[in-house]
Length: 316
Image (cartoon, rainbow, N blue to C red; front, side, top):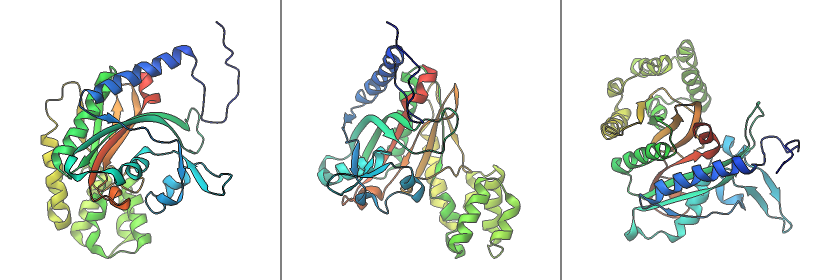
């Protein structure tokens, strides 16, 4: 059977022809089998939802990535661009605290408006997992190990880098800086501009400047966080997580305290990115979001991850 490949589609989307579709389904099956083997149960979410419930829940950048339209009833609707907040909105009213922890997974497409680059997708097929329950270190460890075993299930070797999404905020918490200073400081650290730190906020204490300089140089270690009271608990938790990630054959875990990657606005603890041995860009990401479910009326914590199957195809 000959199928024409000359059809034009909008930027960032494509059709999958039989061989590509079969490969996609094989990867999806391996991932789902790996999650179901750990007693994760599937949740199916809609592809569209109202815009209003997510106001103030996600970051401005994430909001701008959503495709929106007004339906025939005059309601403002968005196409799914992120499973995590949608899952929280769907599960929160039905959560039975006596049945926690709750382990679920999902799969499906997300569509995001991204600045166009050669080969940049706007439509992604994702498989993800989430544990809702107490904010324990053991649940962080379980999720990191599950992400690794899921990648291993499709025949790739994972490298997972992790830190804490609250680390930068904790370092500067007691400095009483203006919002503009905080944004500029974060940018300087993320882009390794050590020389900008004192210029942006010369009034910072010596300990804070020293730790930020270490972050900006990529040389920061857990012991460096002991000089700042607000970061000691974070350092202790990350150390405990690190100790729990040994003996995962075929997987590598790396603590990257200088990693200030883009935050969708709801992470409140561990934050990690998932790489494969054949791809330099992340094939997935995840973290802890203890406030997200509370925004939708459920006083519970959660941790989870999402894998972009499109990017795993390169390793299959």
